[in-house]
Image (cartoon, rainbow, N blue to C red; front, side, top):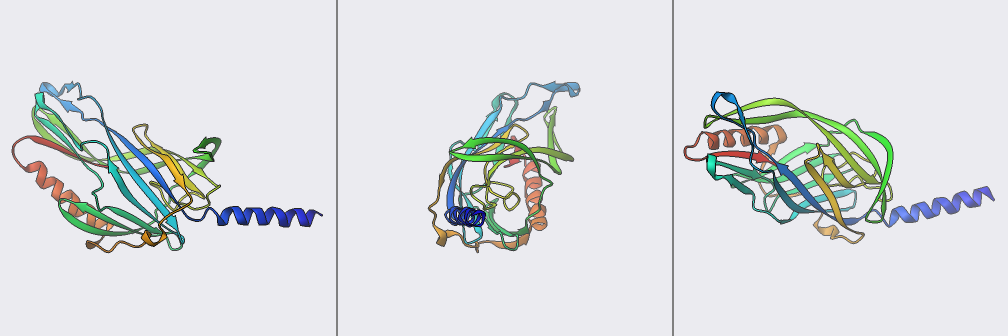
Length: 263
């Protein structure tokens, strides 16, 4: 009798998982952007009000692969502080930007547009040291588990002092809180894809960057989940070098001071 119960339970699990191997998720991506500026004597001036940059993205998954792309940009990317001649511009995903991942071998290809040029950036999944907290909550009807990690890297710190802009690379640690659902046993998501044992439905990074699922469907365009081919082929390191070079040239240009932020 126990064997019958076990087989029945296993069959139900297999059937449930078979129904959850492909799908589509729509996310709302929000980032609060702030700028710090210093005046005469190095005294810090009040920054402009935070600006919420909101984008809609979709993730398609199936055949052990996933594809992420932008659906809609709901805000203007630029905002300005006219009184101090400062313009902040967010360089985010372009209309044709795509991220594709093969879960089987962890290979990732990103099609990026930057400074009117197209790139194909090849990389691999770089897994974080995740910790399960035991906390759960329901998102769009799915029971989700909480996982947390710290992401270590570097960021460019930009400051204004008496109208002069300086850039300095500094260490950066981001606290990441993710919510994933084992009910969909596919490691897809709006970020940190290929790292958790289930579909990621929500992410919070340092309290100022969030991804939140607004729609989940079991139907998807499987034919659209394919490796992008448009752009100059580069590694992640090569792309970062070219991006930094372009941004440095922009910062050196005359006229209004423009601060560029990468989403």
